[in-house]
Image 1 (tube, rainbow, N blue to C red):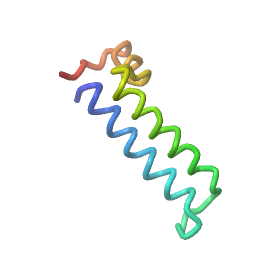
Image 2 (cartoon, rainbow, N blue to C red; image 1 turned 90 degrees about the vertical axis):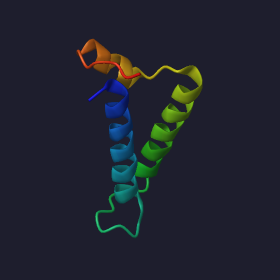
Image 3 (tube, helix red, strand yellow; image 1 turned 180 degrees about the horizontal axis):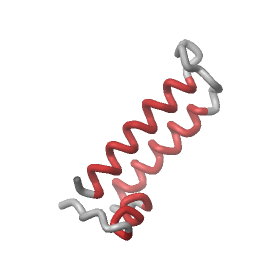
Image 4 (spheres, rainbow, N blue to C red; image 1 turned 135 degrees about the vertical axis):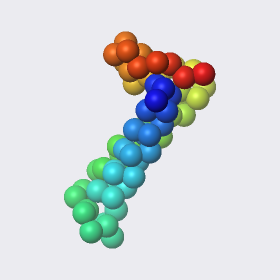
Length: 69
């Protein structure tokens, strides 16, 4: 698995997890402040699309995960 695949899997997981914890109709609702985490993940994905740089991907490469194409 390449670094860009791990980043996208992690981002998808974080969005789904924060929605489950932040929506009042969810059975695992905790606090609506989890929706701020969803916004943070979305903004990070947006900026990485323009700047072509992602901190998590840089850290994964330093840990030895092979880069994507």
